[in-house]
Image (cartoon, rainbow over all chains, first blue to last red):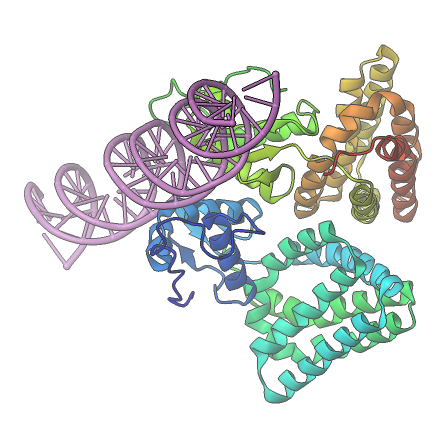
Length: 238
Length: 238
DNA sequence: GCAACAAATATGATGCATCATAATTTTGAT
DNA sequence: ATCAAAATTATGATGCATCATATTTGTTGC
């Protein structure tokens, strides 16, 4: 569940206080990103119901921005409207997961390939640092942090690839997997990280195709645990 | 520009008249799909400005559903908010086009590959019919229809592939290209269609990799005209 | 006690009033 | 006539009242 972390925007009479100069974000976008984070971090469980009024009260805004945000998430299928007034975090199905996996292999493979071509020393160092921290998180048994670092590694590749449009697509895809991954990351944490080393090697040697293959391995093998979990759990209707 | 085609939904006191049983679409979604069609069919030109109140008046609804729809399109970058109250059809840049092209080759290649594996006789016949009609449209000099049939061919592949999630991703990608393609389809109509024949051949023989290569050729060669157009036109700021 | 109907509640959809601000026009001093 | 300041207008953002309906709860007859 979302923590009661307030937005505390209601106290602001106008909305020209803090972060308005560069990004002309409206409240709806703020709520949207808040919910995105909650989804990706697994704070919203599959099947959990969301109520617009309740969220609005929790966040200290009116229903309008919350409705904006939820409608956006429903559109991109990160949330599902089972009926006209029943908004829930959707369950993943096996078929859907396999489709997403195939798409990820293509797109993250592309990102890894371009990243291998482009990466400079500083960017490679950043990737190494992420892996190092992830190793530490696993050693500490901090699955939440490991999950977060795993995701950051994958998106660092897209960032290095210099493909902002691809980044948006992949972000939406990860949004789908967030509630699921958080559920099962603990079981397969090692597998998630082990396959990052071949990726790093390929990037260091600027071997694009090898990087793509390595990411493909990561997605296939690291996701094995997830797939087993899905096939085991009956996935109530969905 | 959008025609003055009305929605005429204002006349409905409640909204339980026609299409509510299966799809619990709200007005916002209706407006969204309307704008999507306008974008894909090139009825909205790059740089054109949209005004919420004006659209609402034109469509006979209040501003709320129009705002819903426009915010969604802004999120997926099919529309751009230059400033807080300046919503426009964005211009395509060369860099963005190249990125989208690389993504399309991966994703539509995947779709073609799966379609080649799956296609049954009826589905192959449908593809052939689309190509035939496209041939006819070109002969008639009907570029708008040719453009539409070209798009339908590409999406028929995704449909045959049986990948609904991929379909959504590709739809959003095509949304980006709609205003651009409509601008230059006339110049390269033949190139758009010629490369569909190798795709058909590969699908008939259920040769997945060949289908992927053929689609890649189609995207690369058919898009050549578009790329030249982009490099010629200075693309005002964007 | 249980089932069927009715009242009450909950909840998303829609329209709209109001606000803050950017864009535009008007006006007035030089 | 020109330019700058002020007034006006335009426009998206936000909040909220109201509506229709699904869901829940309560009541009543058997």
